[in-house]
Length: 444
Image (cartoon, rainbow, N blue to C red):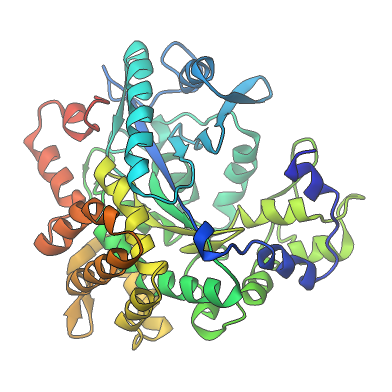
């Protein structure tokens, strides 16, 4: 029996049952790993158009090609929607963004080899289909109306729900691309410290990784339009959470927040939408159409929450644009240096410790437009970024010195103040073959 099947058999009746889901996920320090996930934005090479799912240049054809090479296809309603490959997974986002959830690693240097193998395969199959893949965090060509929806039942429910809770949910689903790092924790105290660190520096990370300045075919004036989209996607389940700074019982605090966030759906042989405002607390208390809440339902609900730092059976860092492959590779060691070394973690928390929660909210609102230039009291995010990278390098020198070289691209951004977004705007304004200019090397 698969783990998910086992969890479907475990009922949940109390907050204590939900808290135990987190408490049982701790790992000893010598088993800590880091996983990296990234989404790539594809275009039809000849036109710059977004590839549909169907057809000879479709995302479906690409997934089928990957399935023929290696892995187990995940099929839903006759469509391949994912490929499972041991500890890695290839999936698609609502607008056809192509996502690799790489295998979790103890050694960040190994990610380079994994990515190179992925790039080689993606390049080979994409050339056959006439596709290219861009190094940016938001689709720069065309408008959202030009993008096809992928045939994935989960996204059908979310597509209907998003306009009821914010103005930018469809933009988030169809146009954005992110890179995230996933980290282990040992116990509640360790998870609380790591979550506090992530929330303390998330806007600095967003500014460092900014790579989405082009919108609807023109420079937008934003460093990261992707992050701006998130400011009004669904604020009940996204953004900053004040309890991270106020409470050390993070498993209970996160649970008490999550059970009152409205659910999207219940999964029973398919995604079944629930009534607006129906929460996990209500599901746990009253059931739903004769069904009762299980640990599998809890895990699914947790995957539909989108705060800057997300707690599941591991912790996710979610505030960064996807960009170049060196910057994709840099996020894991950056977070390893900040979160797996207690001295560095404390220093990173101290960097913004004097900020009120209202100050943090203001910073999160302003960073999407002004990035490293955003004012923070008497200093700037850029100055804080230099200090944060130095802290990460110091921590990494103790926990994984062999990975220090991977921080070179983010160190260069902090030192020069020139972001990926700045470079993208410069390339765009030169004109010429913009697809070649913005594509990942080897994927143009």
